[in-house]
Image (cartoon, rainbow, N blue to C red; front, side, top):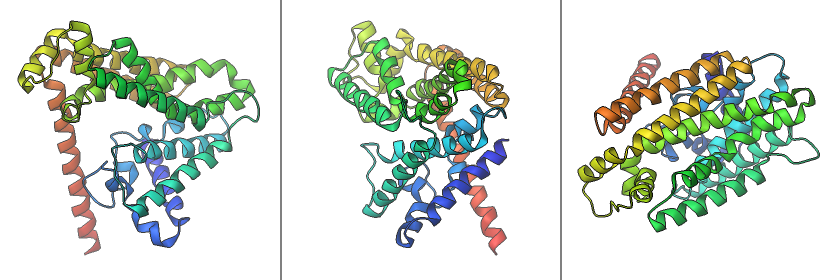
Length: 326
């Protein structure tokens, strides 16, 4: 299934690019590079993340044939372009004007796809709702980083709000299918589990890079918990302090628990491959927590190794493609 989903992702995007004005098609083809998601040009979206579930979650979530496949197709399209749109509208991403034009088409495609599966009446988790949630999350994020401290509970609320765009497509499918209302909670648990599992782990493995931008969540949570400021401390001192407070270990355990929540919900929805993926991700986060407890800085090093391995794999793919052309 994984390979089929990767093909579907690239076909969806290829079709999108073909429908764009000719003068911006080349820019659209290179959007992953322009967004800083890869260091190589012309990398397909299916090769950006370690697993296609990141970009095509509804395809895995609604694997069971009892869900109308046409709705799953539209939900997957809406989800895919919402993820791209989230990266593209990040305040720290600087794009050339032509790329900004592509992003507007991305957002329109996202909205059009969601409109196909959105209920005509009643409350719905549409992209207006998601945008409002994301804006609140951004304002709260800025406030807490300005203060220099944040309660763990507040961080968890903000983390969920930041993932609002991940909910819209999946929850809209269930809202429109009246005979599926009984699985609404399972769908919500699966989406939240996967999104937060990735978010919590990312905030741990990327904290050193985030600190350079004064946006490291573990640091501000640490200050609230311990009352100790890490400002003007050396990297080694910060590592030691975070180790003593066990905040990195706690966040990794939260990541594992979130992935297990996703796995349980996926089993109930008969989404077998999603359940396997989520279970494996839970094991990864749990293992990272154990190693981080024994060896401070292990999680950051693990992420660097993963990035380097992926860069090597991408280079090998490009070399193979060049040989085939020759």
